Image 1 (cartoon, rainbow, N blue to C red):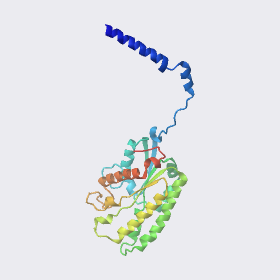
Image 2 (image 1 turned 90 degrees about the horizontal axis):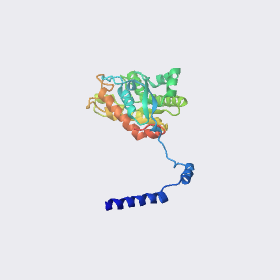
Image 3 (image 1 turned 45 degrees about the vertical axis):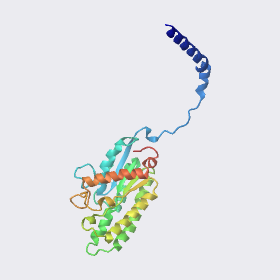
Length: 271
């Protein structure tokens, strides 16, 4: 009993001390109302947003060859975007078409409804150039020389400049993700040939133009289709199959991390 009494006295003294020294008076509390909060940065992705994404270009973005019908790399990446920080939902429109060349893409970008889609877009995924090169290949099939490919490359570079200029005139903030080309001739031969050098030079042109744009990201894919050892080609021996597109989609996500998605999106998206 005595022990309990002593504890009660000690507790009373503790409360008395708090009331006299530690607890603030109403006057002191009222003075705090004018204290300004310490500044801190709230990341843009803190409040998720609806993200508008469009696909432009050729059959690779269209997803030709995907036997699982999941939309190729484009369908897979845009599906994964739903899990990104800052993304509430993804509004997807795929405007790519099999066989499309850069000159045809420019014509498409002059259409009013396509321009409206570009203006609304937060991200654009683009594959272009393969059919420009294929046109040269088919035109010179029985007399292949390197010169026509480089003549066409000069024209392609100008058209790619125009594509970027049109998109930027419509939307200065959209993130443009551009893939390089790969070499399907590796299915025929393992030997190095002139075509390897030609594709490397075309890829360099695409990468340089993409890198010059401060809100764009280049995605190299040539090594993913260096052969068919991993069974990544469709039965047409030109387009990727579902496995190939899965590999491409993983590369896109990997490269967007390297390019800095957070910075490209001005802090509004991250993985």
